[in-house]
Length: 288
Image (tube, rainbow, N blue to C red):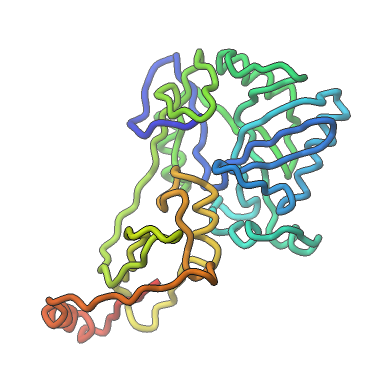
């Protein structure tokens, strides 16, 4: 089930949750075995083997057939950022040292199947109560907190640099695969000035623009950070709730991706002339 972008609603019929910057994961427990699936259907079970612990906990409690929905976030990064766990996305096996260096927490926010029974049609409030009964919070997994005051949560997430807020209608059923107005997401946006300096085609052989290459103006000598390798793949797995469209892949991570030459624009001399004063002031455009 997907949220619809929009302003936060008000009223007692709504509950509010933090919108974390992570990877949406469906956790399926069947006969003691755990499967982790991303929004676009990719199996990520091998990348995060430590989450088997929740399956063991549920099995010990007698819950043998459970499906959870939630967000996987970086545990030691405040506020959580998707790029912090991006290096783990590609892995088909991990070592204890990798788990320790890049720890994650699964924030469960919904349940659609309990003890083999489909509960997707139950109201959100009832499913939330089931989730509370199922999950005991630990460092590796927890229930995503829910609040009654959306305005206060909006301000708190803005102050702390968290991605945003999701409002959920208390009486709403869970609608798999649907974007519903029973869930409304509002995201904090930041803006910056940038210059478009190029583009790359969409991967997969389609003759469309896949991404723009932009540069921001920064002081010479000022330390800069660029997105790490693998972030684009993590965005792809996260789906359309993030800025990069689902299905796109960073060509730096795709050895089979063929870069197409960028044609020099007819107004190139004019553009260079416009940028010269910036360089003369001791600044430069930093491409990422």
